Image (cartoon, rainbow, N blue to C red):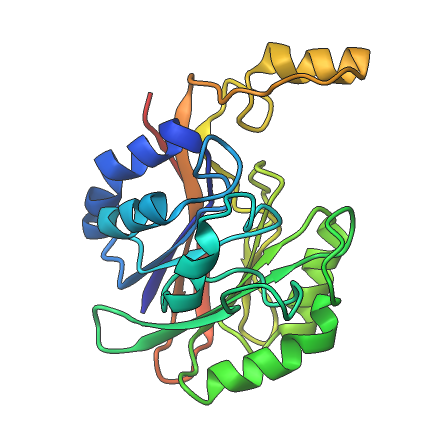
Length: 260
C-alpha cells in the first residue's frame, strides 16, 4: 500500500497547488490513499467547511488539523459530522470532532489516521502520551495500517512519540514547523518516520507568511497583521509504502514538487 501525506497546506497558494497537481501526483506515484494536513488552509490560519470539502475534492481521503483547528467558528458543527476531517485527539473533550478516522484506500485496504498535538508552546488539554496507546488500540481493531500526524513544535516530542510507537503503527509524520527535515527513515520495528513533512504553499516567505511582515513583528515586537506570501510554491510531504497485511512500513521518501 502506498500512502501520500501532504504537509501543512497554507492559504490560497497551497490550495491552488493541490487543485492543480494532486490528482496527477496520485496517479504518477500510484498512491492508494492520501492524507492532507489542512491546519492553515484558510488564509494561513485554520480551515472552513468549504475549504475542507475543496481539499477532499482535490484528492484528499482524510484531513488532519492542528493548534488552529478551531480558529474558524463555523468548523465546529462540520467536525462533529465529518468522518474524514479530524482534529487533534488531545484537545479538550468539550471540543467538537474526533481525533481518529478510518478511510478506504484504492487497493481495498483501509487506513486509520490519528491526529495529536505536542505540548511545547501548544498547550493541549492532555498530553498526547496520555491517550496515544488507546487511540492506537482503537485504530488497530479496524486495520493494521495506522498513520499518526503529530502536530508539534519540538523535534524531541515527535521523535519520542515515533520511538514509543515503533512497531505498533505504520507511520508517524510530524507537522507544524513548515520546514521539511532530512531524517525520513524506517525505524527498527517497522514504523516510518519524518520529524516534519514540510509545507505546501509559498516558500519565498517565513513559513508561509510574507517575509517583511514576519521580520517587522520580530524586530519591533509590535502587532503586525500577517498575510500569506505568494512565491516559490511547492507541494511537500512524504510517501510511505507498507505491507497491507501487517501494516509494517517498507520505505518512506520525502516529497517536494515545485509549482511556481
